[in-house]
Image (tube, rainbow, N blue to C red; front, side, top):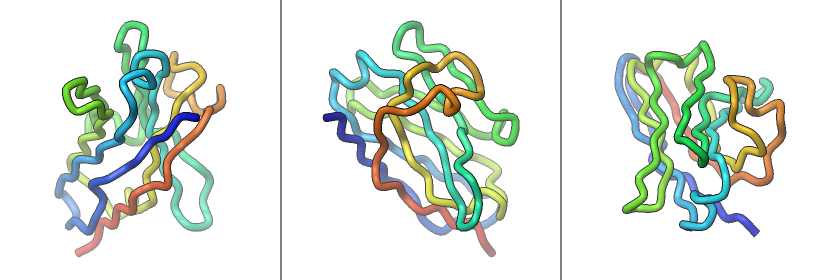
Length: 125
C-alpha cells in the first residue's frame, strides 16, 4: 500500500511563499507519477500539478502556472511543491497523490491510487 505524507503547510501572508513536501518511498517515486491537489471547504478537488515518473514531465493547472513548481528530491525521497506569490484564494488543504497518468493539467481526471492526509495552507494577512 502506497503511503504518502505531506508537510510544510502553515499560515503565510499574501505574496509569500511556502514549500510543501510529500514523503514517499523510493519505489513509489520510481513507479508512480505524483500529483498535488487541493481542496478548500465547500469546493471540489483541484488538481494543481503532477510530475511523471517516466520522463519527469511536469503539468500545471492554469490557476497556479508560473507560481507553483513541482519537483522530485531523490535524496530526500520527496516530491516538493514550491508555492510563490500566494493569494488568499490558495487557502486550502493540500494533498499529494499517486496519479494513474500524468500527461496533462487534467491528470486528476485520470484517477488517483492513493493520497496522504493533507497539510493546511492558509494565506491571510
